[in-house]
Length: 404
Ligand code: ATP
Ligand code: MG
Image (cartoon, rainbow, N blue to C red; front, side, top):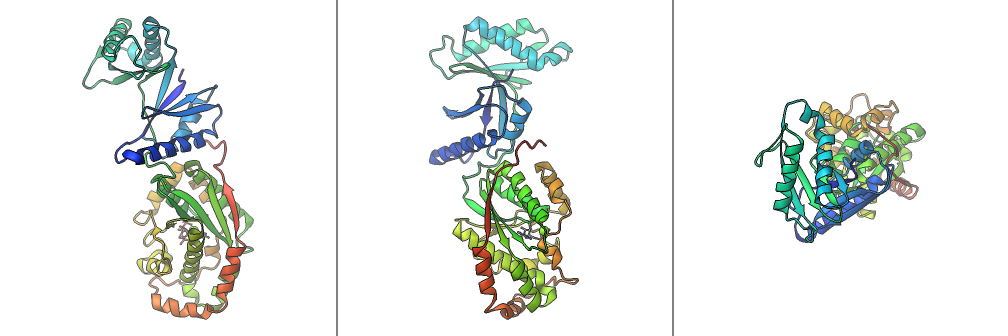
């Protein structure tokens, strides 16, 4: 019964030239999201509106679900489009629409108030909008005794839009909000196999930022399954962001050298500093404007204020930590909502759990850390260079057919 969707987006702050960029990016992201749905669709922008028209059979629920992952969409209105075959025909179609969508409410006696809001986008239509409102209102009141008009606060805003075809809609399903990915530059996500980093990537992408990712792999200490898990997580994040360029760095030799030459209680901090340095190298090469991590204050020893200061010190790019003030439970709830949680909790070790000290420092002193890092001088530079030269890069597409 629905043949199209009218896409609503928040227009606040989207003015002038920015508006075109915003709308074009939104259209692009919608097209991308629908590539993974059954059916063919036309996505078009006309007179400040974005429409998705189904050109074939399609699965309504699946399509809505995919649209609900496109940042920038504030609401999705399922539309019934009918051919213009005269006003009498339209009256019949609108009556049938009300019966299909609100039939149960209209017949169980509870009553329903409504208001017709016509818009004549095609000016050669013989009736003006005020006339369409009055005429259709009358037809519906005659058809359904339980209906009444309320022009101020109706239960149902029945929109009639006269275009090439005539569009009928009255429902708004919620969109994810945010800004279309691609309108806010690009950032490099440090993506581990845990719960937090995929959520962090999701949150920054929601503000319109395109996401690349880097994963530090330590074979044979971390398995291929751990790596596959990160690829799977990238594919889940890609359902919201579009394809993710995932860089995989072999971190083993660097980690072993740190293990050999630095105090064990500082291993994690020094390792994290090297991760940040390498991530920043790749970020700069790939025109990323910042780094993203899943850190949250106090979650573990390496995320105390002192530890974060020590990790942050090696970066010149801004580091975005969208989870910084969140409790684990709040992060878990988002992970569940966005569908990454189940994959994140699969029990494959990541490289940080292999080399963790029994008693890591919780209040590292930056100058002490710097001094201990000097033990690596002369050799670690070559290892970092090799790690960058041998990095693997894959373009991770959204996991297909995922429902949830
Ligand atoms: P997560 O749940 O995201 O794994 P975590 O609670 O395990 O986080 P840490 O292991 O201290 O926390 O890592 C903090 C952040 O550092 C992660 O959120 C992630 O952004 C980054 N990170 C940690 N390990 C890796 C890795 N192997 N590859 C890429 N990034 C990593
Ligand atoms: Mg982790």
